[in-house]
Image (cartoon, rainbow, N blue to C red; front, side):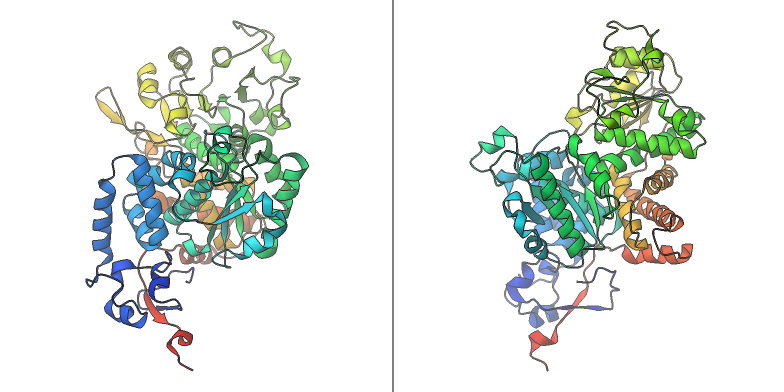
Length: 572
């Protein structure tokens, strides 16, 4: 199946027939196979006689979806459809994107990953198990399509805010790649989800008789690094031009793997760079709403893991572009972790944290309940931040006392509780609006309903990576970029910020509606492709040619006509 958009009048050469064709989710049309194709592909009698239109299939399928009683059942229903008929799946989700995206991705995908071994239906993607570390080339050769353009890989150790889910983590690459197709039109034939099964330290999974992963404690240290090296070597050999996205790796591995392989492999880490870019886009929009220069913000980050460091690094890059020096930009970010404010010389701090550690002299005169431990409330009281971002996965940590303290010092506090899933959010928007007299500019990691305050309905923007990573991937693939850089993510953030509804109505959402995500992804792709060309990482073209290349990569879900290949019709 071609990865490009096939015009309606063209035909696709297909070799499969009969039940084999019906069992191929990339080619199956189900009841929409027309009469002539039923005859040509030996389908006669294998389907009910009525030839349905895609619209009829959508109506029937959506009706079945609405009858499901809970989110897990809805997730299973959509995953099963994905496994039967990809065209119908993508068209359905595209037409009901606001309703269904939270089901196929955050927050419900987290539950799907937790229940993976109990709701398993069919395999999807590749399972690269440590047991078969000497056969990685063989495993990669089993990919259903050799023309892979985008890979998403995880080792399942830090799934959302849920921790180590072992082989169940495969649901994340599957969900991410579905978003690549839905949001940016990356053809599903060119995507490949991969789980690196290196065991699990989740005792509940290891003791579960139905667990489908390798029943072994996690491989660590040099053995783990050697396995990753073998995997990367295999990927570069088998798919030398593919873009690889690292996803949901533990804090101790995420940043170092990105750093180790970013110059060998066209790759990025969405938890670090994608989260950073979408957050920066929201902050750029908020800055324009309140009339404040981006470089002048005072930002407190609660949580100091890979996501927080990624956001901080993107903020620094954006502030530098706004005219700040690197030193000035770093000085405007305060990191708070489980031990309180990150301070220079603290012996437990990782190198990435130390980039943002505050000097001892700065806090010498600070007031605090416990001077040896400056907690989040102490930091807010002493810093008077204009921005508060949460990536801690600690629900409810943005308390009323904390938020009221912040709101007493700034007119329009910018508060982003970003932890996923919903149960891990540092605060709920309704409380934030109540505690700030509806002055706060709020964006969240998971979707929340509008908040009614002061007689008006306030839309809550979702700081959703789906606005960034699909467009970044589209831009990289269309421009044939050789590497992914920090500057590309800054360009992506700036492109996304232009779509903020709050720019025309200050009480509106900081992020656009999901219904505009394809439009956003195209703009992001053009910005990323142009930056890749500017940096000498892609062939130079005109803006018009780049746009043509982006458009050509944007697949849409519709049925095309099939022709049986000569080999199967017996022709010479």
